Image (cartoon, rainbow, N blue to C red; front, side, top):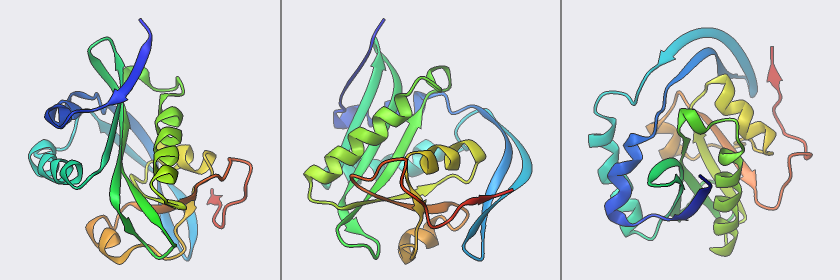
Length: 190
């Protein structure tokens, strides 16, 4: 069956938690003196953290009600991946929107769906007048590698409010219209 994409309705937000978040993580990035440093750490992520749906569903519904953009990729009726773009400008860069959520279900990874969702979010951000996207990303090797390959860079000045909410994340920014061949201000260190 072909993967098809569409805008999500508000009453589909709870369905986001059906995405299979499982992943084995063997290394995590830390930002040390402006340089990404990869350190070995092992985590066997089997599902969403306890209480994630109860905590984050109201936040996502508020984002939706505020004009956020919710796009899902479906395999039949099964949600394979989702991207959420906020509607309010954030950060220090001019006209920056936050990519608030991007997840691809485990059975659908490594098929280009994450890149497709990212590119659709960037196009929507551009349509809304943004020049940049802000990403607060889980520091796992796969996640940060994904965003760096797409041309994201470590945020030169993280948004203070977003950094306070997720200080363990790697805060990234993406110049819309940028391509993966552009240089980043921070390179991963071994």
